[in-house]
Image 1 (cartoon, rainbow, N blue to C red):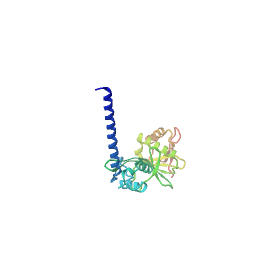
Image 2 (image 1 turned 30 degrees about the horizontal axis):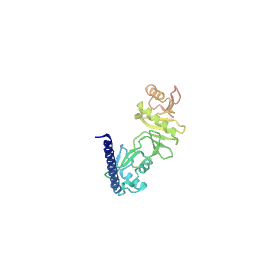
Image 3 (image 1 turned 90 degrees about the vertical axis):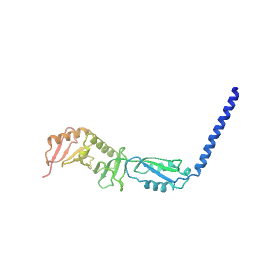
Image 4 (image 1 turned 120 degrees about the horizontal axis):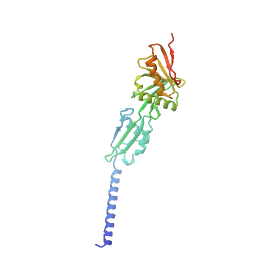
Length: 244
C-alpha cells in the first residue's frame, strides 16, 4: 500500500477515535449533570474525637448548603474543604465525590501537644507548631498541663513546648506531678512523691538544669527539708528551707 494511502487511513482512524472519545465524555457529562449526591462518608485519619460525622454533616449543610439530593456538579468540594479547614480543631481535610454519588470527607484533626490552664483566663490546647486552639466540652486529650500566670504570647507557648519535648526525651515527663509558670515567666515543676518545687526559670541550658536537679535528688535531698529548689542560675542549686 502506498505511503500516502496509509497516511490518509491513519488520519481517518485518529479522527474517528477522537470523535468517539469526545462522544463518550459528552455522554458521561450529560449523565453526571443529572446525578444527585445521596450520602456522606467521613473518614477520620486519627483517634481524636473533636468532631463526629454528624458535626461534619451539620457544618456542610449550614455553611455550604444542603448536599443530599443536590446535583453533584453543583457541589463545590473546594468550598467544603476551605470551610472545614477554618475550624479550630481540624488540621487538614480532603473532599471529593465518587461516581456512585457519595460525598467523601477525609479528616485530620489537630493533635494537642500541651494544655495551658492560665490563671483567670480560658484554657486552651497548643499543637506541635505552637498554634493555640480551644478546649472541647465533649472530648479531652491527655497531654501535659501547664498552670499559672501564663502570658498570652506565642513565644512562651513555644518555650513550653520545648520544655515538654526535652523533658520527655530525657525521661522526666512521666515523673512530673505538676508543671507551672509564674508571673516572671519562670517554669517550675513538682515531682511525684516529693514536696519541693523545682524552679528552672527559662529553657536555656535545660539539659544542664535537669542534671543539677538529678544531683540534688541523689546527694542533697532531705525529706521534707526544702520548699523550693532553684537551678535558674548557672552552676548553682539554691535551696530554700520550709517555713517553720
